[in-house]
Length: 585
Image 1: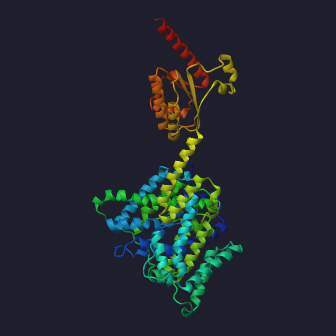
Image 2 (image 1 turned 90 degrees about the vertical axis):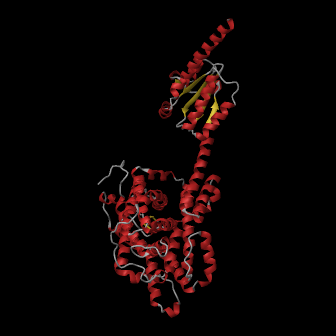
Image 3 (image 1 turned 30 degrees about the horizontal axis):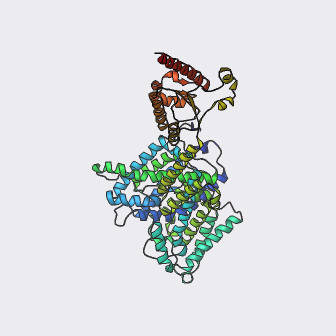
């Protein structure tokens, strides 16, 4: 089954119908989905608990809302998604947004805003807005990836050390570091040993080349089993999923369908508020796709992914679910655990579903130190540490962009980091375009170097007096337009005929056209003639829409420099005759 490439919606799962799905791929997907499902469970619970303020009236408890969201999102992204490896669910990025919406509009308001956000995301995908993500510079993606890796390590230090305190770990970096410092004395040696043992198993299992079963799932089962066999008198208190979130925190039932209640007068406000969900969801989902592409050498369909994320967010509110997005950490773990196709996302959902229905008692016994060690191992794998090592070997501008993306990801979040680093990258791009585009004034010597120099030798040996030829080589955009205007202002006196040679200009924008119009007006006001030569079809179309051709006259648009010089000779000769006649009078 082949879907035409010009469609925006092309689920990756359809590729399974175009080629055999091997037993090796199935094994990789099952193991990866199982691993990610178990590791993502405490994160999903933690994010959902943090997203819903205490005392909020919800259809189920806060942990259940997060788990049901992950199950629904995993099924829909697995079926309709545009990437092979995406793992969706509640995200840390959504926590402050969810809290703010619940405080203003209640939990039902959050559900309605999530549904509206889903419609907007799907619309973005249909109109191929996701394609813009392919313009992310390497330095931005590298900075994001390493910043996320460092953030994960910082986030997991508390569980790695086994810090025991009634106060929940904050989400802001400085508050988090302060929390770690103040509560470091409550850490336990048993948790440190458990987490360290998990890291050691992950390292040596990978080092020995046992690729059939991912090291993270081996470490999870081995260490959890070992801890359960050792008497608690020897280990002391160990923080587990159950002790941290409550042993009854995992629901034992499926979600039920219900329509969220909302007041009609609040819908306009929720339309605006939903954009706060759309932007981080789109950014994080597409970044997860970009990072998985870098890890695997594959390509994902950005627009299909946005449509699938939209479908997920349109569906989960009817089951009491939270906003969901593609999760960078879990997606990276999915890749590292051996996933091959979107079947891994379906197995991830099935794993969470089985935990809910059958294995909640056992899962609550998994030590949080094990989970922390697995995530730290993932972070160490996805970080672009090589790029940091060669930081001073790359250009200064790229270095600044990378560090901007990295530091803002750590100190704030990926949305702020994307906005700032892309703005920085755009400014660098404009500067480079401006510097790369050459503006020069041609002389007879320059013409003699032309491959068509025989033509000039036959016609004339020099550019006619009073004729100035300005040649531009490269894109003529707003950064270069000011440069063109300044070079023109430096020309005194103004020429009788000004030829603007644009045959080497690939593209121009409205700002450049405005500057060209200003130059032509100055030439006309001085009694001269403005000629354009060598303009391509795209740039001519821009000038036609702006009525610029009507302004300077069709005769002053010449196909090439030869035609422009021929017209300039006729014009200068005519002007010379008119000046002679005026002198005789």
